[in-house]
Image (tube, rainbow, N blue to C red):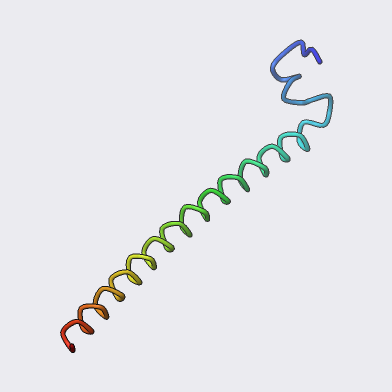
Length: 66
């Protein structure tokens, strides 16, 4: 497809609103997915650190009881 001008490219033959809306929505959802994934990864790492620390405290307590 060949466009004569940039405004013609943006108009996409009359379908520009739908084309650019679909691109925008797709990128917005991808950014949201990345943000949620990063948030969940941080939460998992914090929970893992807390679990490891708790297990170490229990192990130390059990060693002192013997």
